[in-house]
View 1 (tube, rainbow, N blue to C red):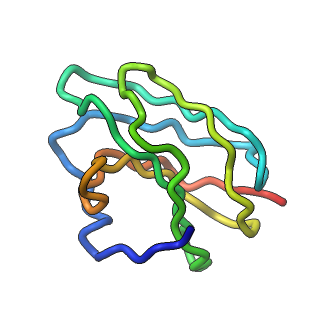
View 2: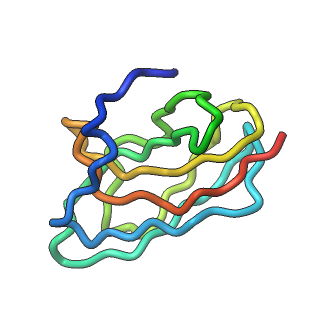
Length: 110
């Protein structure tokens, strides 16, 4: 489901040391696993969002909600998205404008 985000969405919180791995080799609609590194100051939970990057404005999708940070990984099914450049964002569970971490840009293929 695509939803609008305010410009504040792109400000990453400096209070968190959560680091998302940059995915590679992902295909639209497949089941994938995202991993991250944590620090004691990180939030207990976050939501994971997939967002189009670069010049393709394909939208944003919630891919995993209420993810337990301590797990270090989450498995989910990618939505059926157009091939292109994307990033993952770990955001606050009650305020999606509060971004804890963002992955590097990666490609999703068809």
